[in-house]
Amino acid sequence: MSTVFEKIINREIPAYIVYEDELVIAFLDISQVTPGHTLVVPIAPYENIYEMPDDLLAHAVKITKKISIACKKAFDADGIYVLSNNGEAAGQTVFHFHFHVLPRYINDDVSLKFVNHMNDVTKDEFKKRALMIKEALL
Ligand code: AMP
Image 1 (cartoon, helix red, strand yellow):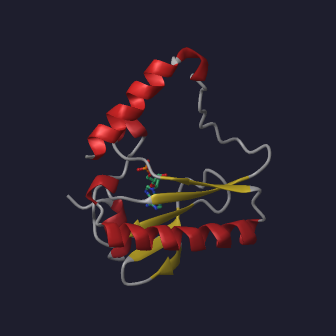
Image 2 (cartoon, rainbow, N blue to C red):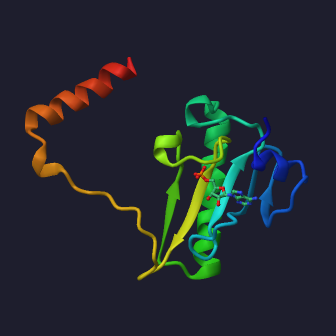
């Protein structure tokens, strides 16, 4: 089943497109979590980052950088979040890979919160977790 992003790419539904080339498209996120909130989306409908071919991902990152700089300039943003939700548990709602470029402003109402658990994790546990990732990389 085609996602809402494919419908935008195919011009079946409207969007505020700010950039397009042969591989990616960027358009305003309808939710405008902050002013200028933009999505960078590969034209090919890969579901998530795990499936993205490396060269396409590299191009999407390059364009995400361009859009980030443009948003910072256009909206005089104080910072930029670059986010990608992969999987329902991570908050993904449209299953066509994308980067959010989310301008941040001092005193904006964005509430993504990283709780620091550093004091609950022993050195052994840090070592174990690092090893788990290193082994998974093999
Ligand atoms: P995610 O939750 O990371 O999968 O992000 C999907 C994003 O797509 C959400 O932030 C939605 O607001 C956005 N979205 C859904 N429908 C549209 C649409 N028709 N035009 C622009 N953005 C959309």
